[in-house]
Amino acid sequence: MVTNRTFTMLKPDSLEKGNTGAILEKINMAGFKIVAMKQTQMSKRDAETFYAVHRERPFFGDLVEYMTRGPIVAAILEKENAVEDFRTLIGATNPEDAADGTIRKLFATSISENAVHGSDSNENASIEGSFHFSGREIY
Image (spheres, rainbow, N blue to C red):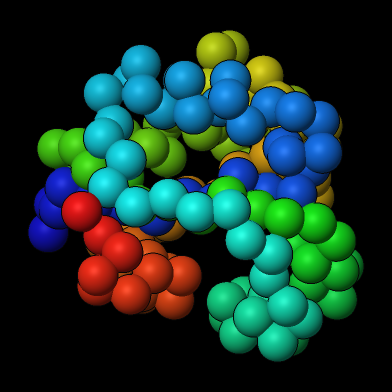
């Protein structure tokens, strides 16, 4: 099923390095409309819940620590075929493997500090967007 919305988070390293505006510009230039956006900071409980699918993975503790060390920007994006198109725009999880011009190639420094999150399915886009936004926050 193809939908027209996806979820993204600009991770703490993006904000720490001052890359928020440049990343949002790339998102806009790629034709995405921002229908919800806010800067917030995840609590340990938030991060553990959001990334619960990775709970048994060896990197889970480091992921939670990373995602709670500073603010993030959460956003819901709208565009035809949003999930797939956004995954293409952000590039591979490991920036060394990401295509030239992708967000991760330009702004990520490692596989663990990879600048941005993008939903991997339409179902997860809905779940993740609802985690960060109430219905009245989405326009």
